[in-house]
Image 1: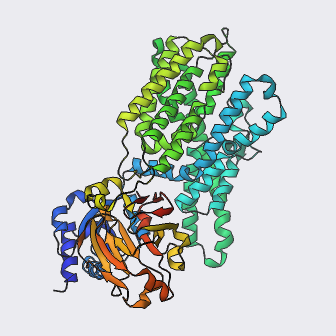
Image 2 (image 1 turned 90 degrees about the horizontal axis):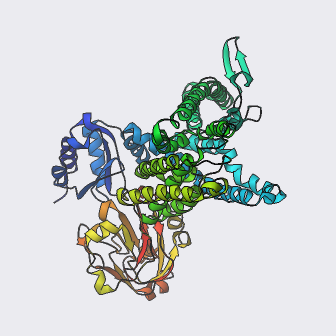
Image 3 (image 1 turned 30 degrees about the vertical axis):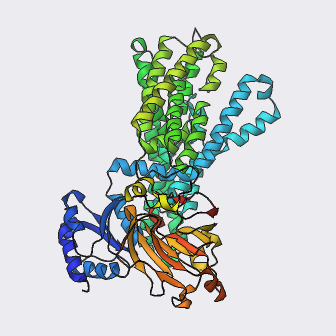
Length: 635
């Protein structure tokens, strides 16, 4: 009996709680994608039992109903009619889903989105800075050499111009013009402004000020090393730019909008955002200077925990003022250094624990080198790239930093210089080598152990590593839906030679229009199911099959290029739309010789058609594969 699309749509609408509980709706090839106000108001069991709904799951803030190819679009039309909603794109639904997240999560996500693209630059620079500084301290003659000069220039470039990198990335995240973002970033570190690294050693009266309208002061101070002020400034810039685009006549928009956007943002940034953060820096410095002298190490413990948060705000470089003051005192010892060193080393340990424990290859590739950078005293890659993103490692690192800083205070460790922490710190704590080693060991041990046991890789974070291991046809039959759900892996449905998606001899497949994936040059003419799932579509010509798998994964297996023209000749199907299938189950057979005789390529496209939902889709191998050998993982 034909499906009643209107009835299905009405039942879905009623079960969701009506219009008041709906934010946005869209659909893709097989699913209805919805964003609701409150999922807790929905009877999920009832939703799953609606005739026509083949599955329900939640992903990245979206409620997704699996309905099927050729059906979902008709149900969607009826759903729009009954709900009174307007059609939305998948991107709009994703944006609506993100907007439903709590403010704290949105802020953390925004920071992550800003920093992920620039991580390679700051990880590389962080490692190089740590190594160059360590060599300079260990070999005084090297510190004055031309080699040191040029290597130091290369190493610190990313950090010197960090506000520009952040501004460009933030403009992309907030939907503004990235080149206008770059201009804002450059204004904030313009050479006509006093370098932020130098201003801490100056008296307030020495800092030059522009006075506009005779009363509005703007301090001539740059933002080198800052993070939060730059992101706030660029967010403001994007809001202004978008507003102007909507209200400025198109004829003059090209020059009026950029001009007004930059001028207004720059004045607000230098005149308001700047003073606010300058005041905050002063308070933090006064608090830090006071608290480390409080009660038998308690103050050191507190600052060892809070130090990473000041790195997040980009004001940690201001502690050089405190250290310089300590070195100029009667005893001439820098007791702040072990506090900062314990905090930095602990964050590196937490990052390393994530890197070693994570199964997601992308997470590993960022976490492990970032932890090495932190061990050398440069923690931005570890904090922004890993710990802050996952939150729990940041907190565990704060606990480890507090423990190490407390010990440093109890041991009365003092450094003879400043600006160096972590492993290179041994060079300026020569009279306290053993005690300093104990501080780092405790900070590392506490942070690493806590992170290892507290942090767990969530489903949406997980991907798989390891080399793909062959699975025999017999063993493949034993794979279950639970295994596929856990592993989030796709297995080769055909024995043959794997090639990249771009190498598939078809422009549509190669360009990724139908999703990401691989091509397989088959050795045998048998296609098996890559996981436990349900057949969502089959073609009349029997050459292509769609399968919906765990967590809504949608895979298209398209045998041959242009083989639709063979009208099914040489193909035999063993399943129908709606059939439940097991991993390794035979789906269709085809005659390779007949395909080639007809003048077509037998290269088979295996595509994850909703790969945009899984940003860490990762190919594990190319080259020869057996059927049911793991070839790629997804998030």
